[in-house]
Length: 349
Image (cartoon, helix red, strand yellow):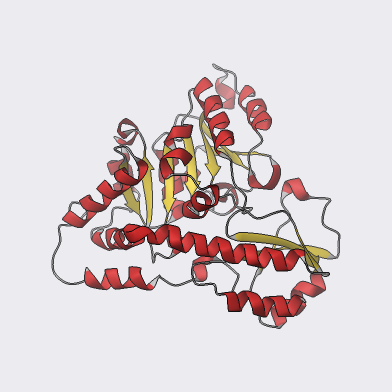
């Protein structure tokens, strides 16, 4: 009953096997080998256009270097209040982006409310040097609340970005989970809606350590080789990241693992919604489930062997959780089994 995080899950056997297959022999370093180039071509095929791909080691690196690639003096990125780059990256985006700031925007269940974004952008009139200047908007798909931006919502935020001359970044740490839930293509969820830069995550969905920055417009990536090198993210043996992505994409494995994780989350959510002691905080759309329960119930379940996190109450949800209650987060993965869900269901029955 390990629901703490999809980061706790190991590597998918097919990905581990491919790492072993590529472990012997010699290959050109720093992303210049045949395997690296082949995987980069696979990314272009998946996104239905020529994209530029940079392998990095962590999602925090991807988000931070994305901001560094578009930095402006006095720059400000706008992201949801619960966004990973605000709440969980220890200021890394600002550090790598020459002191740029990330400004929090409110919205329900992890999604930026476009009216709040408009109001925030209006607070930075052109030429008012004391305030700094907007440099980008970042959205997370799926969100840190396990919800999704619909395609029309992404397009609306993108249109606002275009009006203000700003690039749109997507944090896709759980990109595949969002993709299979919406039932659309990678192109439809990104550049066709106006996304310029994508932090593409594989680690949470079965990879060992495989993340990538994907630039939809090669012109925006011209400085990234230097930025990545300066940031100590230019891996010499990058074939081992490429090997993970090769197996990840082969025969649709990445969609299969995400579909399974989402299905496990849906099973878990159904059990929680039928419980007398727990209730769903909101309806999950991917592989994260948030539940509200008594604090003593949370302690009891954890003592019985269920592993999950007591979570902070999101800003937009304050007032919906009683003093003796807590919000808890459950995350499923490719390695979660129906037996795990059943055992937890027995605990809360």
